[in-house]
Length: 311
Ligand code: SF4
Image (cartoon, rainbow, N blue to C red; front, side, top):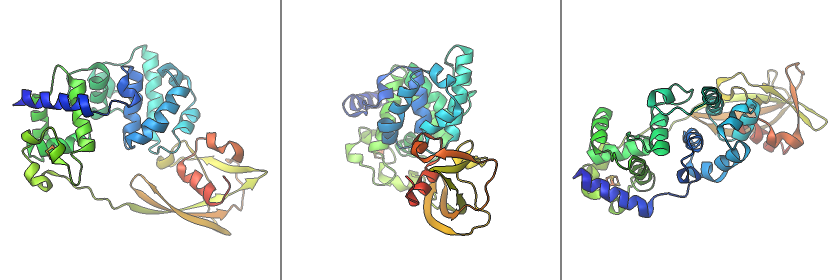
């Protein structure tokens, strides 16, 4: 039965898999590592069409990335959110370069900053065709339904038994693609699924589907706008949310209101209010508005400048 399932899965993948993503056409571990970090929390098409090609153009090798300044890395990451990923990626590149070799064991990969169980297993399976079970959120949902369970322990055991040890890369990618395109959170198209015949949960999908609370936490943010000869005052953020990025200075006085807008970021709904700046501070970094696109700023800051028609 398992053999038959694997055969069906691989045949489906050859014909229907998403083969065109640049990192899937490569065995370069740096590309695979970079793509996996970018894909944490970001839609695959955004990464493939924009951020990934831009990044490898600017930093073609892990050595180039390790030698870059953090500001340059953050500037290129701008708009992708979850900026800790960029910092960890940069740190990891420096560690790998100093060790003179890319780690190729699960334990060694897990020691890199920002690399968890999923990322380590994905690098091993997709970069080295190593026989390891990979479980991202799409595969997890698919496994729950396929095995008719909601227990992760159960999934781990069954997935280990089912794993295709000859073609682990294709096997895991096939599951990932079915999870992302067919076994969707709502209304999976079971009729198109190559696993339909083997799926124990297909007749009671809600029982094997975890639902996440979508409610975002609301926050009020107040910023000051200081302008001088086509330059804007920014400061280096110390907030965990925007650590090391340049942001607008906070508004303490809240005088001379300029504009408001809302912005969604990770689990937050941010209500942002902009005021005219009153008192300059020594920590200000004056940035030319003409070059602001190249600055390590968050999309919230960009949105504020757009709200004020400054860019
Ligand atoms: S048959 Fe349906 S529920 Fe089962 S794995 Fe396929 S798409 Fe998911």
